[in-house]
Structure formats: structure tokens, C-alpha cells
Image (tube, rainbow, N blue to C red):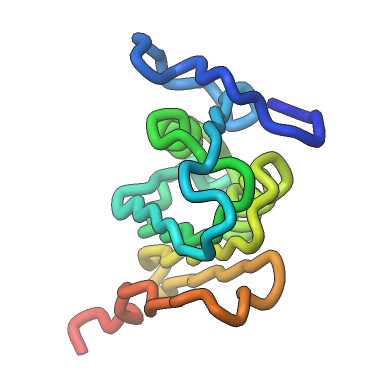
Length: 156
């Protein structure tokens, strides 16, 4: 995990064969220079098939994760993000830990102007859990569309 205050700018995954990291802590997130530095715009990543493990039962949990951010100096490289998100497949963590942990790591390493994450978790035991986190209030001039994930309604 990158612990410096500035993210690395030499991508380790782009154009390379990369294996799925064994754990989120082992995943390396790559960042590249923002091609539109100085502009205020939104980047959205949606991962509709996110999986992790329940830390109590070991059973799989499934979520639709949506990450929105307004970049500053860098943007996250999508292949490294895909590998990072995939590394949760064998990670035992509660919904809140996974969702907030993903958002916090991206925010701390990339240092965007603003970031939010929505974790729309599918029901286990009959109860869906949605988890939301954002770094701060969004920039005033940022176009911020709805995340587009309907609340869980079951058969109703």
C-alpha cells in the first residue's frame, strides 16, 4: 500500500499482465497525471458485481459500488482499481468497513478535490445495507448526477 503523501505516477499494471492481489492491503493502486488539471469535472466508476466475505460466517456478500470523484493532480488508473476491488473477494469485512475503506484509501492516496462512494449491498438475512461516505461537501461548480442505483425493493 502506498503510504506517501503523493501517489506513484509510474503505473505498475497498465499494459502488463497482473494477478489479482490476495488482499486489499497488498493491492497497488496506480495514479496517472490528470489530463484536464484545472478543470472541475466528475469521474465515476461503477462496480455492479463487487464481492467480499462476511467476517462472521465467511459467506459471500455482494454489492453495487459507485465511486464518484473530482480529480486534482492525478486520476486513478482503471486496471489497478479493478484489481484493488477484486482483491476484496477473499477479504472478510463488514459492509461499512469495505465501503468506507475503499473510499478512504482512494481519497488519502489520490488526494482528489472531492470523493464519494456508495455501497449498495444486496440483502443477507433479509436486510439490505447501503453505506455512503464522502470526503467533504462537493465543489460548488461540480455537476453531480444521481448515482443511478435504485433502492432495494425486493418483490415489492
